[in-house]
Length: 205
Length: 126
Image (cartoon, rainbow over all chains, first blue to last red; front, top):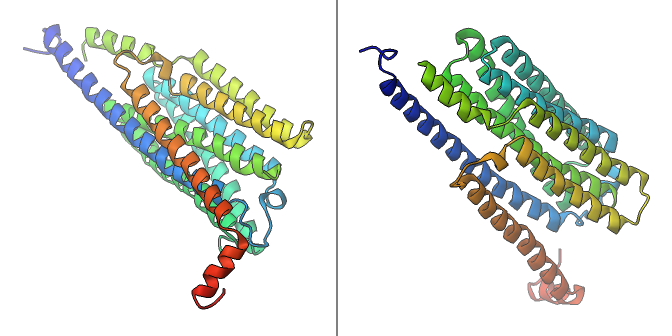
């Protein structure tokens, strides 16, 4: 009997698919939550160490706020275009999916470029992680976020290549959904880095 | 895939977020970010007030993104994602505020004289 001839069987199959999808999504959600605990421990380390400058410069003199605002807006916009990409994927518009996720990739790469430029500048001017407890904590916290962004970009590049060559399969759609959760989550972590590290650092708190 | 299955899946996905959802989330987030940024740059209040305000704005943005980008409000019962999230928040609060509390306490109890005595007893300074 073909699938089309018996709706009951295909319905059962699609229900099973959906349960599997829901399980994968929930598992990924739990991973994201444990990643939050990792970031929380780094935030705690930063909060404890951020006054220990050992005679070196504090955040007040080191951070360039316009640069950080540009990074924040880029990441925020990439999170938004990622959402638009998901909507396009649900509507099965392959070209739109490729376009929005390409925009996401470019904005993410731009963010990473600005961050690495900032790191490079700090290291060249003698304010690397070896300078003080404050800078060690700063590089660990912001660097871990940057590492997550790099891994996300790699993942997105692989997904884009897969979609270009093989089209939008159910598998790819699930992967894109997982990626979007990861990307929104990194954006949320960045809000707290922006507020606690950069803005509060600029206020000298 | 049969038509019926298509219908079920699209119904399931319809409540996971719409274009309007993403746009309102994005616009709100931009406003909250710029608000916090301008407050710090213009420095119009005392630093303590600004810190309280920007932490408040960050928490608002956390809520906005959870609702509009991650569609947490649209989860149906049983709300396992929400439970895991709340458990995570409890752990994070204990971890962060516990660390700050303990380390400040240590700082407070370890006066400079005590550190010197301790180092002398160890047989040397730095």
